[in-house]
Length: 149
Image (tube, helix red, strand yellow):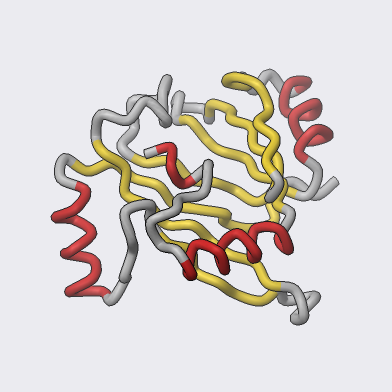
């Protein structure tokens, strides 16, 4: 069974998200908006299919990463979320909350061996690409998921 197939996103907290976004823009060329950004890429085994990796800075007061005390959360792309959650439960891994269903995929959260919250995403890449296209046309309109900051 496939488990993780890639990195779906990198999220981290900052005391001053706007200031840190400006730093990343100036020094690393990451031009993110108020809801972060997505790095687009092509699937290795299916180059006609587009994928994306989200990158977002959350306010340090966000509750989105709770119950973890970490200042970051990694989103991992998975092939079959429900099957993986069953295997993880059988292995004693704690799930946090319920599965979240979006047009662009399913999300669930687990705690790793040190209590860090990990996000698992079974993407619908075509729908996610369409959503990103719409956001590029209107950057002030966040996706439901990216708006969680």
